[in-house]
Structure formats: C-alpha cells, structure tokens
Length: 211
Image (cartoon, rainbow, N blue to C red; front, side, top):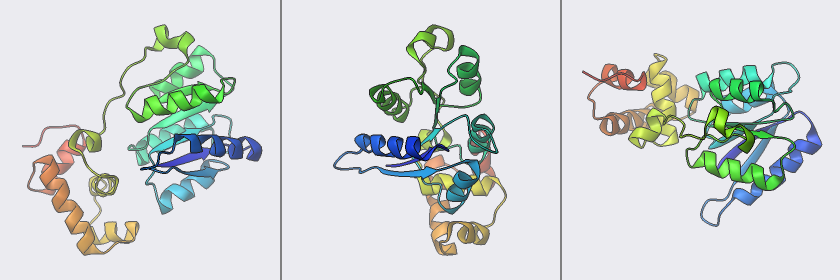
C-alpha cells in the first residue's frame, strides 16, 4: 500500500507520515511518502502515480488544496483523496466532497479518527465528520472503471493514457516500460472489459457502453 501526504508544515507532515504507518499489515506494508506542496506532489505523481490513497491539506502555498484536488481527480482518478484541514465548516466539507474528495477529516480530530476515515475510504466509503453525516450522507463513492472491471493499477494507468490518445510507444516511454509490455497490458485490458479494440475500450473508460 502506498500513501502520499501533502502538507506544507514539515513537523505536521512528518507526524502524519509516522501515524499512517499504523495502516500497514504484515502482508501489505505501507509506504508513506510526503510532499510539501502541489508542485512537489505533481512531480512525484508524474514519476509514479501508483498510490492507493492521498491525504491532502487545503491550505497549501501556491496552488490551493481544493484546486489541486480537481487536478488529481482529472489526471489520477484512480487515487482516492482524503482532505485533512483546519477549515472544517459545512460549506468547505460539502465543496470538497462535491469536488471529488473521498473523505474529509478535521485537523482537530484525534489520530484514531483519521485512521478510521482512511480505512473506510480504502473500503470504498465516503467519510465525513459525524456531525455532517445527515447533511452530506455517508455513502459509497462511485467505483472507477478499474475497480468495476478488476484492472490492476498499471492497467488502469495504461487505459487512462489510451483515453488521451497515446500510442503504445508513447505510453511505454511515459511509464518507462517496453512497448511489448504495453501491448500485454492492452490485451489484458481488452479481456477484462470484454472488448476487442481500442474504440470499444475508450467508450467504457468514458462511462459509455461499447458497441
């Protein structure tokens, strides 16, 4: 399991990274990485976006956390994002959830609450502070195409790049793998989606039925 923590205050970030080690299991040790701002996080994601979860502060220097949330949902939709913020009023919570956050935890919450929220999100829930449950509801977040069809993270990333119109060679260069490896992923994607060509796969990736 890989987690990315985006928080500009070094002491807070390091404390969070240490606390999130509690999410690891014997069979799936957690790798927790940190980023000081949106630019730092973007650079890490460009190198490798194979993350299971992202914890994002809203008050970041430069690009705000709310703005970066939109970027992540567009470029890396397979990564669920949990907002961790001192701004925990209902308007902020609602805006974050409507913008695609999978959870929202107040910085005033104890560590145990954060860990509970992250575990719920990893199971597919949308998590918000208890006092706002009646307003926003605790519900399942929509499953991604990768989750619905059982694609691996590598296959999900290849499908995203296919949807951007990239060729196998371009995808290989972006992911630092051989073109042959990309072809293997593409074949596995077609099989999982029950399609025979790229056009049909892209329809499903866009939430449409393949014909």
